[in-house]
Length: 101
Picture: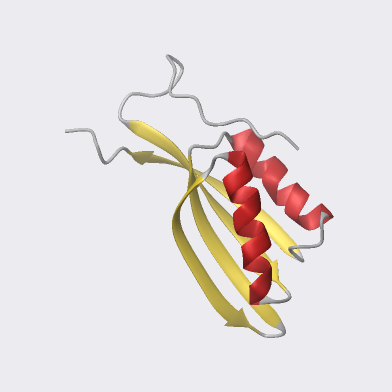
């Protein structure tokens, strides 16, 4: 599957950056290696990860950059469809860029 990278073209808002919180419910924490490969294939930048034990599995919360909203949603659906995640959701965030002075 092909995923679109986030554009920094003229339609981007000055001083803001689109980021995504990808929240996953995993059966096994070792599935993270396959998920990391999906992230790499998309060109997404992982800027944060929280992996925690949860009832009968694990929860993963990933902060992603350099990915469009549509691509982030498609990634969540792909992880569900391929059985790597039992549940998946994406929250889109517009945050101030760190490099803006």
